[in-house]
Image (cartoon, rainbow, N blue to C red; front, side, top):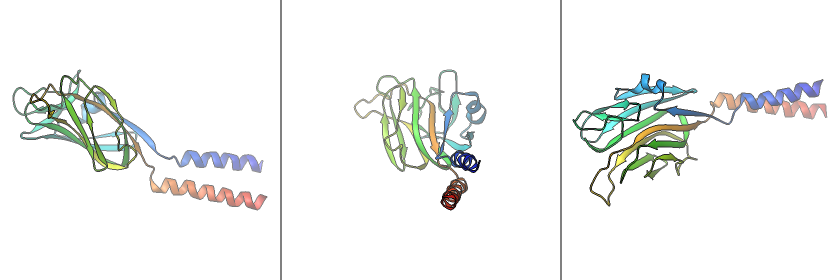
Length: 198
């Protein structure tokens, strides 16, 4: 009976002290629509991770915009593609900062065309994105507090292209220090108890 009790205690210790948890921010979903659409700054919380978004336009101002076809920035100048990150009214980007340190696991973009380019940047590194799909950042193993994704002009072509949609991203958060400490204390107590019984 004692052995069953300690076996259950060990199992609970691993459940209580996870190594981290993931959160997928779907920027084309209904939660993002309510929190970010038509705002220059917005906050979205997914699975306990809070992200603050800021719309940045190089030589203008703009708001984040979600449509059925994409998520991007609607710059204040006429002729701007409303749901893409592009360069029609100045180079557009979205910065994202987090409530806890995270690892950026993946970024998904769509609607790339021609010579479009995206720059994914953080304090841990940067990557150039040149096609529709999911990108695993080269700095994904590093813990970061923020990143940005923006449209950049292709240096080999003077045309800016049509832009791209910022569809989603996934992060892995680290557990709160108190939770990890609690799990470690439980494991030490189990080891001590196991030595006393043996």
